[in-house]
Length: 127
Image (cartoon, rainbow, N blue to C red; front, side, top):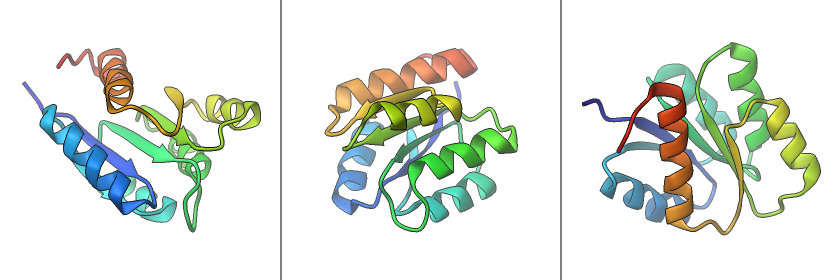
């Protein structure tokens, strides 16, 4: 059985560390990025199966990352997180083909359920 590789992109280092550890404990490989530009670099240079990106990040925001993935034609499921979630952010994320948009703070259990659903839908992977 293969192990999914995820990108976790958020400018909050404590959030990345805590969530990354929780995801690793559930059998996932996690690489992290502190901003949108770094996220795009990792998407371009790594073999990833899913990306979790925060909306509000330096250099490039999460929507810019989602648009990049969508415009590149990659079939990479993306989950957008936002502490200021509103309908315009949700609409833009859906237009960029986000798998899901979640409001922060997000419970690890809810994030894992969303990640596992995306991996099942895209790759027929089950935890």
